[in-house]
Image (cartoon, rainbow, N blue to C red; front, side):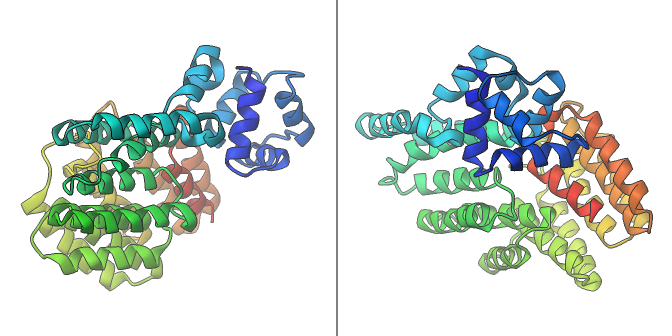
Length: 367
């Protein structure tokens, strides 16, 4: 498959015009790319060079290898979970769904193993890569929901799928978070009911998006039980971030204290899974929270604590901490310096490692 068709399909999947794609690259990189030049790419009059391939990788949220390599492009588009470009894979998804129905699909233990794998992969893969894989899994598990325990699996997959959309896109992320909560309720599993709500609350609160929904889902988790758990920990910090962004310092600090007490009972030993909250990740939550509150002293302490235990194979989270410092600079009055500091941190991270959340934080700093 030629690169021009792929660029066109990825652009259309986002509902963007050629001009909008050009603007996204220009806004991100300070270039002067024209709509006509994008049209030239799509009509194969010329191909993007290395710089623009990296830029396209970032703004279209697709692995760089897919744009660079014809075999990777073909694999990307024929992957049964390649729902980023729905018209191309609709037939394959239907085939997989009916095959799962006819063959019975994976067992409960096999689904739990899949979830564990996705939890680890989410920490290092880009949103587009996770999205296309999980979309196929959702088609399969949908065919097995006659087994009530698989509603729990479906709810956790839905939560992961929701996280591949910007939290500000209420028509997608919030829709899937709410569906995940309903699916967890169908399972009757208390741990899943709390976890999916808490994970949605921290995702939205951390991103600074749909704060009302973050509060509602966080409150629902807290209403189910007060027993310490990772789901409850996520819910509390989701609400804390929402309070901080509204300027309610007292509530944010009270929730921070509550969250630290929950962590003392329920913190994780697992270090590299999205389903875990070890010490370093708790401090990533706190670092941004305290930066938003303007508490530089304690924010820096949280950043230093996170860096001491942050796994080397997760450089994206080190970039999160650098963006928190950029936010502190901007909030102290040095908006230009804070933005430049954060931009340098983003530029130091390979574009294929950029996430939707990092880009939203970059927007918060610039604003």
